[in-house]
Length: 287
Image (cartoon, rainbow, N blue to C red; front, side, top):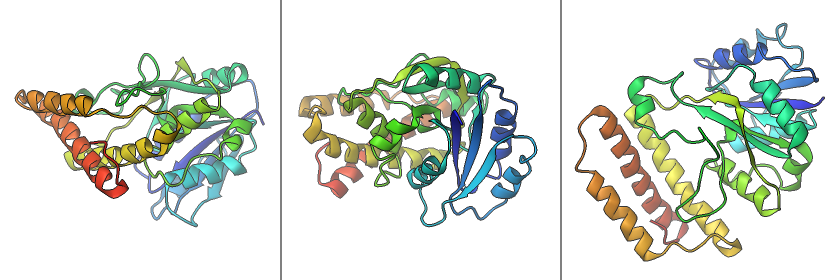
């Protein structure tokens, strides 16, 4: 088996059929499989996946009910997978036409890759416009402070032996385990390549409450990342940089004219709240 597509799943009955439809339509001239990881689903997600047994040559459903969490589910699916390389998808996103062929061929050439993100197909206009468009023309830059680039977990592909060499995803990070994984591999000397021909359509949260919750969680674990990597090379955040960041945020708060502006401002406000929460929780100064 050349490639295993690993999909962690928790209560995704509203979206997983779209992802499975897209995957079942993929073609590649090498043997590949889909591994769907049941992470304590209580809805009809697995019943929906079972319907694709006759449409996908190699489809497996793996149980990961011992504990909840995406990094745990990813690790369970990856270690059980039969592929020489692994590609990760989220159950609420949709891979684009030709994604499998592009990712499979890229992993035959490179050890560690990330595909392109597209954010308009699965989101309403205001949701799409109120979010940045990361990973559209390259990897996501990390600049607070500057460090290695990274990519979204549902866009990554990696050789299996490298995945195992760094211990998979760190399960202490229910959020940003993908960023941590990217950094671990790059610190070990493995380059992350951007593959623009492979596209994943990303689905954002479609409510302000969901957007706010996600921003807080991401920001809180961003502080934990900073604490983890301070002893191994991430630059220290200076007070000058922190103050400038907060001043820029406060200045932009005056220019809220629409729902899109408000949603964008709310994300940034919740991000800062989450960082403050993380500073207190992890005893680290990185607001």
